Amino acid sequence: MSPARTLLRALVLLGVGIGLTVPAVAAQAEPSASELTQQINKASTELEKIVEAYNKAGEDLKTTKAAAQAVATKLGPLEQELAVADAEVGRMAAVAYRSGRLANANALLEGGTGSVVDRLGVLDKLARDRQAQVAGFTATQQRYLDEKSKLDIAQAKQTAQVNELATGKKKIESDLAKLYEMREKAYGSATTSSGSYTGTIPSVSGQAGVAVRFAYNAIGTPYVWAAEGPNGYDCSGLTLAAWRAAGKTLPHNAAMQWDKVAHIGRGSLQPGDLVFYSGLGHVGIYVGSGKVIHAPQAGESVKLSSVDMMTPYGYGRVR
Image (cartoon, rainbow, N blue to C red):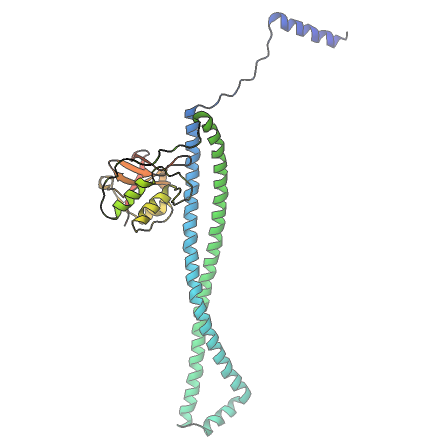
């Protein structure tokens, strides 16, 4: 037996004799339900920021498209008028070229009524009016073309931003999908729902009452990113839809809604007012008695919560 094999056999025998063991690699502990919840909440907060940024880019894009369409609508008639003016000036230039100045003068001297000076003045004024008209149309058209060019550039930029945000959203959703698998192990379900509201909806008058009733009836509807109903909502999509039912228009973005509402103090809160959270990254609708209805996060559904579920950023009244 070789020296190496003899040494190996001796070491094995020695290990058996004194109970030598190789430490096992510690198994990674499964995350607890509490840890899973924290991970999901953190990922959902990141996702909500991306969704709200996506919503804002969409709102900006809609505004730019509308402005570009308005410019294009104005440019159409302007271009037609310009074409008519150009054709008229071209006709006058062609006549002058064919006949020459002297022939034009002879024609004016031989025909028509009124003095020669009057007829020459009419022709000169006509030429100057046409030139001024064409110059005016050309300058106006150029202004519109410049504006439309700027709008086209902005639209292209915003479209690129939307695509970039969509890519980021897919990554977060992919990460959430993995966390939901872990949550399903812990809770038996990847999503939870409070179910529809079966209690008494408080009586609130006016348009605010319409918005509040809408919000109560939306309880139990799943959170769906960038959605404004009827089968799903994100936070700003819910407040948008509730006030849309009441005849008011809000943008689909919490920060933009903050810019549109009248800012009020907490002591002035009334049902229908909006409560903003998380640095304007989240919004809910106040329904009275210290409660808000909101679309919380992916995996949950629209629900009734305390107004202090998070530290409020501010309060706003829809105008």
